Length: 168
Image 1 (cartoon, one colour):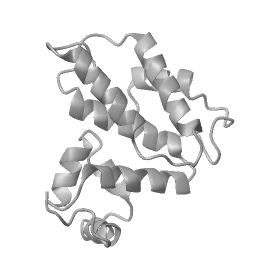
Image 2: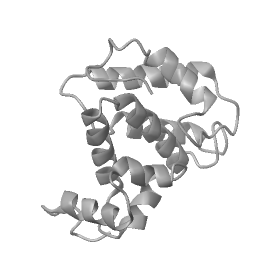
Image 3: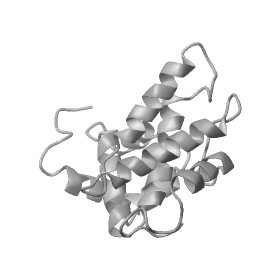
């Protein structure tokens, strides 16, 4: 990664690269590689792209479209793919990796000025833990049944939890 990652024109640079790949939006780009973590997606775009930039653009776009839950689901999948490669409860340091996933996901860019978004993510995380996924579980899309159940329990689809949210 170069020192120019956070230069003033980073958003324009990203937009230009996405358009050169035939993508109209960050969602289009991410949809092309729905089972890859942010780190891999950033590398595809160049050495001067940080995974956090992709997350920032993804969340901003999702908020503008009234779909924060879609970005939240997608980000959790990508973070699990990146930081929990071997699967749920697998490996010597699985507890540490789970903590890393939790912290990383809670620190994804907020879409609103209030704490509702962070509270929703924490509720989803607790629902995921309570569901006790099987050893080796790794979601590969937002359609994963375990992930969907955690979101249904932790981030209900009644529209009262988040301004501008739509169902997916």
